[in-house]
Amino acid sequence: MGKLVVIEGLDGAGKRTLADGLTKALHDQGHTVATFAFPRYGRSVHADLVREGLHRRHGDLTDSVYGMGLLYALDRREAAPEIRAGLYTHDVVLLDRYVASNAAYGAARLRQRADGEFVRWVREIEIDRFGLPVPDAQILLKVPTAVAAERAEKRAAAEAGRAKDAYESDDDLQARCAAVYDELAALSWLSGWRVVDGAAGVDHGALVGGLVHPG
Ligand SMILES: Nc1ncnc2c1ncn2[C@@H]1O[C@H](COP(=O)(O)OP(=O)(O)O)[C@@H](O)[C@H]1O
Ligand SMILES: Cc1cn([C@H]2C[C@H](O)[C@@H](COP(=O)(O)OP(=O)(O)O)O2)c(=O)[nH]c1=O
Image (cartoon, rainbow, N blue to C red; front, top):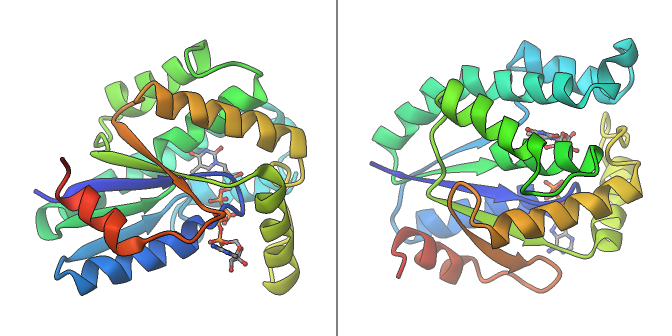
């Protein structure tokens, strides 16, 4: 069985860039890797509804933290068979965002903490009810919120169709979200977490070694 490794962090933290770097390092060390990014825009109707909601195209849907949370969760539920298959055929399945994104952003929106009601609900729905695979390890790519905001801004300007959405435009939400992520990591929520400094250079080879051969 392969290992399920998740990258988490704020918008603009550099998750996609890290996923690319880790994939290359895994290949260099002779491992096979399958990657997924959530939300699966363009592949899941739930993810597409989320994106439209984040751009305020579905009335008050965006205001419902639980409603948005369910759409993100349904996208993952639909992807679960593919993730499980990937774990049979690859050494590592690498995910750019997963269940903890729902926990961190939803709790931050509701001004709750990692030990609060919303995070409990996410676990009940996604793990207990939908039966999503539990990660073996989660990486928190940590950068100061100002750095993440600057990178998201730069990307929004450079890439067509990447205008900042309702969450990305809310600096206070991003700051609260960073705090919930820290708490989830400290609690070892769902798995052990590795906190990686995304403002400094990340040693992909060393990180991969620690994930594939822990301890
Ligand atoms: N370590 C880094 N140093 C400087 N810029 C970075 C770094 N990692 C990512 N970026 C840039 O920041 C922006 C956001 O990165 P991305 O990987 O798309 O973040 P995320 O997937 O977390 O939203 C991109 O323009 C990317 O090129
Ligand atoms: C996957 C996921 C993302 N989110 C949030 C985090 C982001 O602010 C937003 C969009 O996800 P993101 O991966 O940042 O998409 P993109 O940058 O390509 O638009 O959704 C959740 O609230 N719950 C989730 O389960």
